[in-house]
Image (cartoon, rainbow, N blue to C red; front, side, top):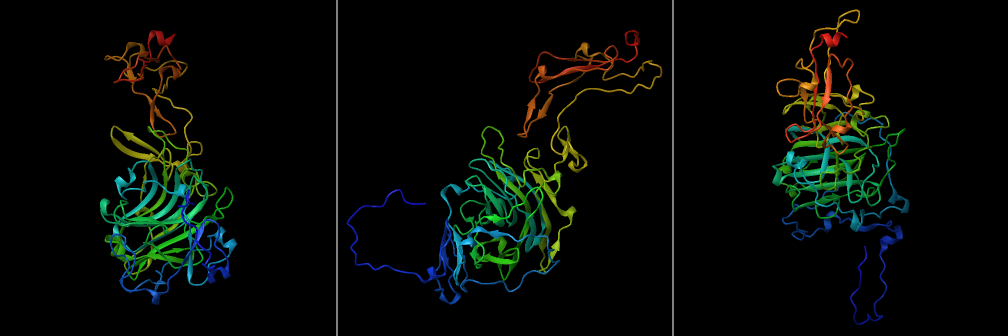
Length: 470
């Protein structure tokens, strides 16, 4: 960004000499970044530090490396080596870390509210996540494959790990993953934190005091390459863990930095919930749905081979400092709009106000994406041989033409779900009727609709009769 104008006034005289900076000898910062020098530990002046409504650095100054990294099962070699484009222009000089300059149109408006059910209900945000809750957690990890989903103007799509603790209005959280905004549709590494439930304190990357970067090789906010495609999948391994009171972030095998424990209240001790999953921002008004994709743009039921985005090797750190694998049955799944984004692509069944269960999307091929036809009506089985007809009734045993007042069986308030995740009423003229033996069982669509019955039809029949036998 540049100022629109520079204040006018008397011109500066030519007495000033041109100043040079030694770090330029090692190269220039790439376009869109600014240099930031890493202050050495012995240069810190006690009691002279940035304040973010409260002191967040302890008096001992910054740490440069964690004393230890949680042990546990070793990550396999499936991860591809990820590169960052800024390296093409050189490396940062010793004693500095890279920091990316944020463009004005990259800001994400109104970053979330709370990490509980009100978090999921926050305006415009939609999620498909798995959750681990109910314990004391000292870290989280996963390998997530990197994609470049389509993002509509003014929106974003991300995949990340949330490590959190505290009630909604005071929520403490540290987060890391990849995100794509509409400005350029590049996949970028990011971090986020808050100590007051996303209200006033907290930010992305290095946009405010909070996260302390110690690594010269990664630029927070820089684009990640390569990204996954239909034939190849590329992972980024993200690990967050608590050590020496601080929450450290590791990407692949690189320790990037830490969130000081002193900026938190609830996370000062441990986390009580961990989420892994995706989020998008939907800016469409009036209940309409965005075309912004989550993950790869495929439902979870598509599997990982060139289709759905995934998190693998999900784990957490216990109080012994060891990483533990998460048992699948310990995870709870949640999606705000399962018909638009989900973690598994399942077909759910609800009777009255009770959710009964689901058919796993993985058992289907065509229904793994969507349905193309819907039928409502009745069926009977006729076991009579030689064309004879059963006396088995359909519905109430009355023909559909008898109407609803104690006679024919009916279906009312017929509707379907569209790709926005909203139920729509079916227009009567859109319905086609069919009966195998209309003289035995038939169907009639009502021409009128009302608030109680909506679009409705009557169906049924007595089975065997003089008319049916003809």
